[in-house]
Image (tube, rainbow, N blue to C red; front, side, top):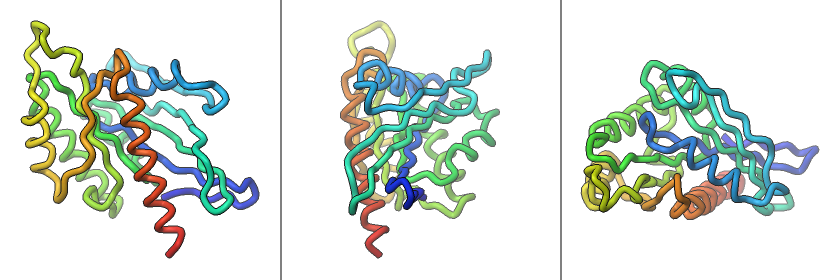
Length: 204
């Protein structure tokens, strides 16, 4: 849930990047951190382990205009991909306002994508949140591997897999977190629909 700081005239919105291990969650945030003007960002925090690139979270607050005189600050987090860190995933999801699900385009990751999306639904459910009611963007990452020797799923197959697990289609953005295409498009889309959702809730 968005945090409203009346004294600072600020609304903090939390967006979590979720997905299977090595799908590109941290790479997304690293690319944003490298390319975005530093005046719009806070310090990025990353905790690494030998078992997983991100043990707990990456934190990258972005300032994005105002709602009713309040500055909007979007905080970006990633969750660890490996199942053994599921308790950390649940912790990071606490208070989430919007989710980017990063799906891995590699063919060998097809089942892992579906398992991770189901895991997201399950973990949200434990906190009485419904995935189908939460702002959600699905990023099809690693599209730069198309045409390489690595077998890659086509976008239509991935859309079928993901949408088959949701009540309604959501924005679907092809991307290469490593090279940049689709990274800022994903961030803009999730920021837009999350802030719209928060604005609607504040009006109630």
